[in-house]
Image (cartoon, rainbow, N blue to C red; front, top):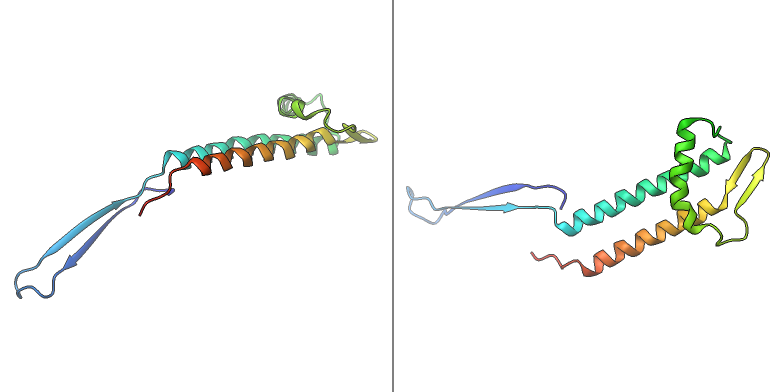
Amino acid sequence: MTYEQERVVTHTDEHAAPHAHTVTESSVTYRTSPWTTFERAVVFIFGLVQALIVLRILLLLVAAREGNDIVAFIYSLSEVFVAPFRGILRIEEVAAGSAALDVGAIVALIGWTIVELLILGLVRVFRPAATA
């Protein structure tokens, strides 16, 4: 669950004496489980990594100036996540003029997505079943 909600249900016994009422109240509280919180954290962290790699690919495609501090920051930070996947394919980069398609970054994007799906699959396998 993504939220906490308290619900009060009131029942009146219509079969009781005319002036006597029986009222039953129950409260239900929904809370986020630790497993759900962990899943969200995994999705958020991998989403940041994937967004950073996509930014790298786009900046290289439009031949962004590496002298710009923001571009240099994105290149250096994303290199940490792209480096483990470099060398998987023989082609690392396809260049056309000053623009380039970083094939290693595309492989890294696919690789990190697979790692994310594996982690989420493991979390879902070991998550206790919900009881009603």
